[in-house]
Image (tube, rainbow, N blue to C red; front, side, top):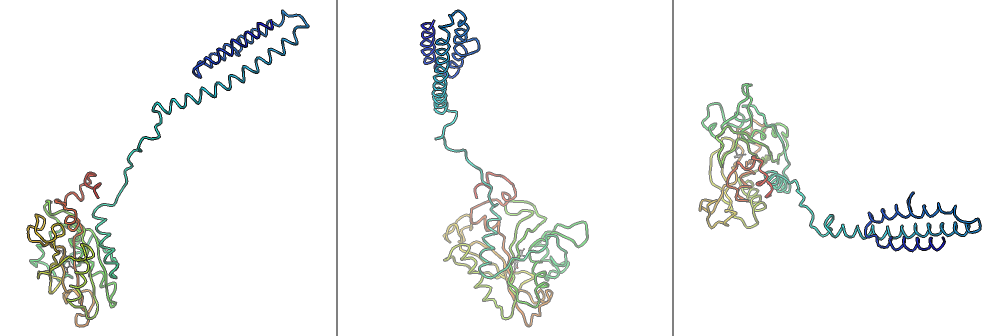
Length: 341
Ligand code: DAH
């Protein structure tokens, strides 16, 4: 019977080594070492042995069990690691595969342009001053020297509210009056950014809402030379150190004299293209010396104080810079547009 046991051991070991997968190995385990496996069945035969033979047989069968268990554990470890390698190689996880593209949120092109404008004016000592979007007729027009029925009101088509005299601001200029009321009698150097609203037909060039950045400097002895020098410096910081600018006389009710500033076309460098309509120049802002009436409305005596003001449209500037031909893209929320910036 010992010989039979040795044979069983040898056969079991041989079969164990033939198992090619963990599944086959489990089948082997049941057949050999399971509760009704061959080793167990062999144990039951102990009864047929004589009392002298039993201890040697018992000892041997325990050793066989032990060795088969050890061999099983070892083979199991080998097969598991081989199966894992095969799984890795066959595609479940490919560590060489490039990662999936991550989508990043980003700042809106109008915000990016606004922040660049803030930075430049900040470097020149101008603080950001915010004022309300919902204005009164008084601040939006009258205190800016635009009385009722003044023909210049046609320049600003207005959204009215159901409260008489309360409107959405059509420009950031009313902030000038708020700033003057708050700072008087100190000198002022502020920019006033914000959203403006106009009751207009929406076209490629006009939106219902858009940003403006207003600027205001008030003090003693501020002259037109300060206006020209400061705005020229702004244009060069914004559009390039060697940009030419020019000032053209214009009319605004709240400044006297008034002007518009053109900058050499940033797309063709002044050679002429469809964006500058082959003139070589693009208009980027309105400006002027604060009208004495407006200074007085802000609380500053125009015989003692003077100042300059300007207003620009960041979306317009971004359109020039990035050759955007339709202002409606800005608030269209089309990711194909926004993701380009
Ligand atoms: N408020 C003007 C507009 O909406 C822009 C402007 C022009 C602002 C001249 C100014 C200025 O401060 O001096 O068209």
